[in-house]
Picture 1: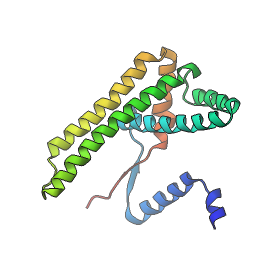
Picture 2: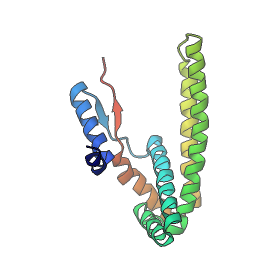
Picture 3: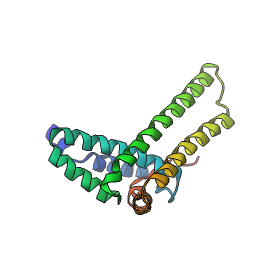
Length: 173
């Protein structure tokens, strides 16, 4: 059984579970709209993980790592020399998002401790901060990448990457 689990890609398992859950409880899934800040946030997290994966392989085999880096640049439609810029910006955004999320979590926990419902306007402020961080990262990429790399990356994010995202919403009661 364990060997069989190793052969099945985790993405397939997740997709099947989501399909099953959607069929059983009428959960709606949708692809987010192009340009949605959450699409860019998802990309920043994806790119950071992808860059870490490439870095690990590069340490083990530099030649293989260079090939992976070239493939990553081609996949994301950017010049390979600009990949470190995307990695740096992604990591900055993730770090800033983690701070906002920690503050939001602290606020919600304090509300629960006081047996209060979290103030909706404060929660909206946290969401606004999140969106500002994401869009600042996007703007930084737009300003620092070459025009061709920015156009390619933005195209990749809002097509290939976006189409792999599925937002799940619970059925309305």
